[in-house]
Amino acid sequence: MNIIKFKKKDVYWYLFIIFLVLIPLVPFIANNSFIQHVFILILLFASMSQSWNILGGYAGQVSFGHSVFFGIGAYGAGMAVVKYGMVPWPGVLIGAFIASIVAVIISYPCFKLKGHYFAIATFAIVEIFNRLFMVWYWVEGALGLDYPLVEVGWKNFMWYDTKIPYYYGALILFIVIFGVVRWIEKNRFGYYLVAVREDQEAAESIGINSTMVKLTAMAISAFLAALCGAFFVQYNFRVDPPMVMSLSMSMTFVLITILGGAGTILGPLMGALILIPLQEYSRALWGGFGGGIDLIIFGIIIVVVVVRQPRGIMGMISDIKKYSQSNKKINFNIGKDKGGE
Amino acid sequence: MALLEVHNVTKKFGSLIANHDVSFNIEEGQIVGLIGPNGAGKTTMFNCVSGLYRVNEGKVLFNGIDITEFPPYRVAKLGAVRTFQIVHPLKDMTVFDNILMGAYLREPNNQKAIEIAENCIKIGYLSEVKNKRAGDITIGLKKRLELARALATGPKLLMLDESMAGLTSTEVKESVELVKNLRDTGITFLIVEHVMEAIMPIADKVVVLDGGIKIAEGKPEEIIKNEQVIEAYFGKKYSKKLQAAKGVEKSV
Image 1 (tube, rainbow over the protein chains, first blue to last red):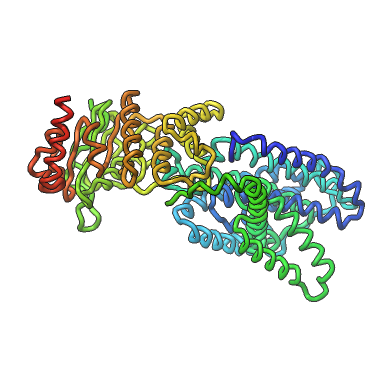
Image 2 (image 1 turned 120 degrees about the horizontal axis):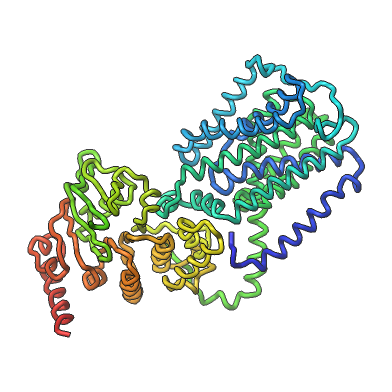
């Protein structure tokens, strides 16, 4: 969040760009479909968590309701293909807009609640939507939507024998969402989000309409989450309520971001890079034990990281940076006094 | 027309009447002091004007616009910006970013907002701590940071709530100097203050509250002679001292 100290961050960004250049080559290096699957999930979950990060990280409103918007996006694409026999794209857009609108409507009353109470209210919303979609005949209730066989290609965003196009689809999604967040972070709106997170009263005193800022953040966040949901359904060829609108899905949004570092642009990617391979590999290796081993490891890592550094992996990285800098400058810092509250 | 008009404002918290039928006006370009003993309702008055509290009765006009029912951010957008008695810096941001936040109110363009913020950093003598975390600087600097942040929003009326309490005497002098300079650029001030040395020499008008009621209003030299105010607030000894100081100032 510092515009003046650009030089230090430049190196950081060059590394990031090199990383981005390498990413498209992944499917050619790894022509094993399991590894490709892991990479697709990393990109997808990093994107999902990034969309949550706008509201939960930058604006500091921890929402457990994002699986609802994710689910609405998934159902948008699913309904277009399964019920109306169309290409998924109009459904994707309509789903995303509906998710945005639903997000604004349900979060308006919820934003009157602060901190933990907001989080609890969003918990309830997931359950409500889960039950609603379970019994809603029009969306096939608990049976869910099963995709018919359609022509493969970008038009239908559907491939059966290869995962490589999905990888590029996920990559595009990832770049779009990270681009949006990067743009927000650098501009006025990003600053306003942080101001609302840090001190709502102070933010209002300098003319920031905190309710409006939070609602806008929510709308953008839900829109992007819904896009991820649409990708998810296209990748899985089916959707049912427990798959998308569940607390565990919501938790994934939250935990990846918190593990990586909420309110930082690279946090969600860091979180996904660690958690997804772990989850997929442990499931593949020890899934036979009856499941759950991956979740145990998942839990332990989260506890350890958050206890050590509440700002997650990005916080740890900045600690290491500070430590190495303070070792160089140690003689200069001794005389300076620390400010009181 | 006065810049800020407070008409018969009454604010109750249950059965406690924090402000009872208070009225006063602030003309453009004035420095107005709002003083009174602890619990007199000064901060309540402030919160009513800045939109943090809804008044029970009465009206507040700013620049001719009725702002009685306005939320704080709308009052701030109109140009009446406040600071807090208990400082509210955005702790995890740098001092510069804090001030930039204020500058964004009138200037959505990044480059221009940065220029405004740079300027306010200079005005507030904050250049040395520009890139420090706002939570890490001393209390004196935090108070100045609040002032600079409010200033960056381009206000017509600045309302300072005890922005000099708890400062060293050098810091108080710097702040007084700062307020004077800003007044000369055309900003109007409403200042709640306990530090009499700070407020009395610079105020054009002083409003005195006691127990929620306005007991006096007038020029500082009248106020320090006012029996009721002496009784309620200064004490006899301090009044003499103040009068002596004023006398010296006049003879010079």
